[in-house]
Length: 149
Image (cartoon, rainbow, N blue to C red):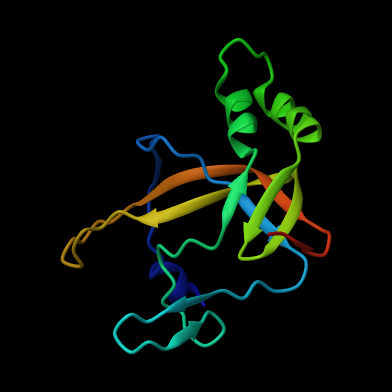
């Protein structure tokens, strides 16, 4: 057992705020299935059958800009609580196709770190991990989808 402990290596973790976007976790009740059109074959690809959905827009998030303004306002003493209060006054809507989901902003009990590998090549012998962002909130969509035109 002591042999396994000797093989462990420490990977440094660095938190750098180099990006302007903040991440928010989305929580759905049930599953979310999205489709996209393969322009070469004309076939409709479903997200349940394919993992290649990077950079695919799933819908339109409405009223989240008002909540983002609460988070960015330097005059507000507690921007996180202000954003939660703002979400109570302005419903957050996610439109996916003809469906509309109503959500609310909720503080996570424990913040969640999103980590990315910083090694550009595998030849680097000393790699480290970067914390891309720390997520403090989630958007919870609890209700069944509404029909939207």
